[in-house]
Image 1: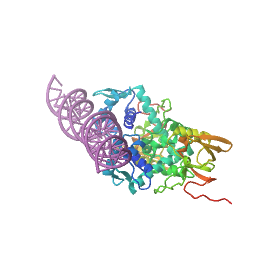
Image 2: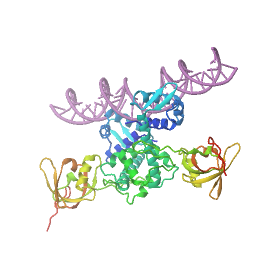
Image 3: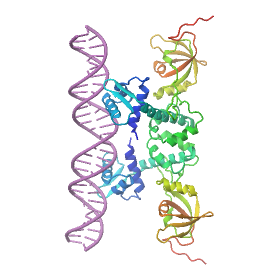
Image 4: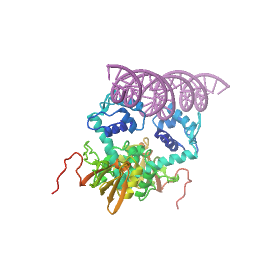
Length: 234
Length: 234
DNA sequence: TTCATAATTTAGCTGAGACTAATTTATTAA
DNA sequence: TTAATAAATTAGTCTCAGCTAAATTATGAA
């Protein structure tokens, strides 16, 4: 049985790891609100004792092995399934389920996991739009882009809202801005980069913090997306 | 915030404490599957640091203060409410909910507690018939007697089945012997003290382990109950 | 290419919560 | 009333999981 602390490290490494890149111990420490030395310490213990979960190279970083990824995905499945269950079955608001799931994810049995899944009609996404890994450890990558990177005049649909900041979630939820919501970007402020959007019949401003946590897909793009060649309209 | 270990100690003291009697540290140790020295150690820490939860007198024992009792009842409320929720809402069998609740009781928020309670129609008893303390720390004492102490020929109704032994629960559940079930004691074996009972149209034997974990009320008593004077029948 | 600075690791400390072995206190039988 | 035994506590050890301070390694600007 892995300790809650070890499980949290695996989860954090998974979150921070892009592809098969190395994750810096300092990045881990920051994510987990610990000191760098503590992260190094734990990562070394992980690499040494707990069988084949991570690879660690001093001064370079740490990354999950296939086994480690499997374990991380199990915990993430717990987390997201719990979030979904709490909103769907018990009516908890989407800004409170994260903290609750953060504790429950480490203690529920496989059987409880299965029962919760069975009680839900659709277990593909959690309330923030994050994909829920399947029981056998598969997760669908979502191809959304950060709202901060969306060009002006594009119309978008919210795919995912990162769930760490409850205040932001409450704010967005009150406005109706959760996954599925669609709006058009009508302007960007020169320095703050804040967006003006047209959402139904309302005009809203979204500050930097929001832009960095909302992932969208572009539904109508008036201007070429960065990286793709411009397209002539007839 | 109290640690899970501390919470478990408070719960164990509550369980073992009759009235305002002292609980032996060795009894605590046994209940918690620890060594006596560990229990002494923890009890001393409890008495010293965590504000006014227990009274401790060396070589005599430990007991809960009013504050300590309040805290213990909160945890027990969590435990039993979770057990009830898991059976009612998620269909977990009554022999598996104890272990699950043992872990969940320490981590659910007040809000989740309230939502679970609201989702249930009747929160008076858990699936084993144990009373669920109210949110303000009241619990109804139940006046049941141990099946082991029931005289032959009495008819009884099961009030409560202690939930520690999952094997026993599964066995009893398969027979239909859960709280509410009624039967008549038709005989007792001389040495083993095992009971023969008439349950509907079935005759069953209940061994010592069962007798020590089932609590009943007597519905019809053919023979005077121990302690009450014999009564002449016309 | 070198050296200052930033990032990382090492060394050593701490508290929680368990343990064993040794000691002390209570209890009970003679 | 005392001595043997049982119960409980003390002393000292261990691991986990965090910390600070000191030392080491990488990095990048001159």
